[in-house]
Image (cartoon, rainbow, N blue to C red; front, side):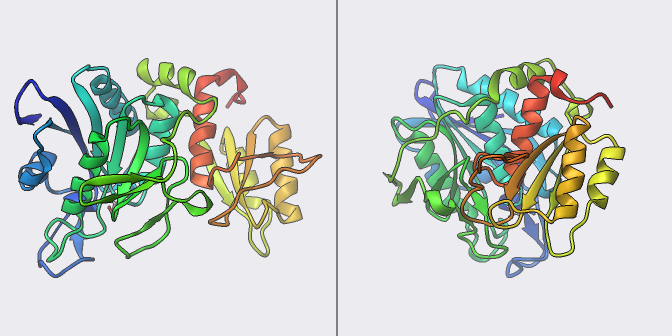
Length: 331
Ligand code: ASP
């Protein structure tokens, strides 16, 4: 843990988890052949003196050091506990979390769902490694700290390429572009311009119904093996029920199906999902479309994802099952 700035100022806590923002390549010009999660958060903060301002002191802590493609439940639990710890300190104004872009939307949604914080928790990232000729991480960190410092800011948000997204709406939509995220139909929450936040809509608040029981399980130390197993299956031309049947035989407790269009499913896949549901597996229907949501219709036999993308619907279902283990089938 490192502290910079005066002790009596409000604090912004910067938690490091790895990602490309902490990545290094052998050659400065190489934006692809790098290794993520190499530079410590203390070093990233120290390299950016402009992060400090006259009102806030910075404090940094390394919570994990991973390429976010390898994000796991143990890190999520540790991160949720450290975020909750710092948010409870009166002198902490807000939190910034550095994270890889690949699973950033899942971590952001997880933190929003379990913590629903009354202070800002701002995830940020980079598409180019720290050693790039023109890295994007430093500006993203500056924008994230500006967002976390903003009076009245609350909830979990993502800041990338000058755009502020809410945890519920954000999705990584591009493999290479620096502005790799979108909030789809909902639109961005705001923009950071020259260190100032221009807000378009309200700060995020609780995403219904996932919090308390899950937090209790997480706080009581539910390790990765105690988390319910929830998988995602996809509808496509020629889909069938074999993957679903294999997963059920293997003890899956929940399934999210990324349907086509308005959550439509090949009849063979649908039959297998209904059979799984009848056997006690929780099934949720999302859409593989990047925009829009599954609009429920009278007589639907599979619950829809309430507008969540397949990966977020999976997190929500895991938290539901974690909060009320009685609902899960015996495996
Ligand atoms: N694979 C990297 C990660 O998610 C990609 C990135 O950070 O942009 O950690």
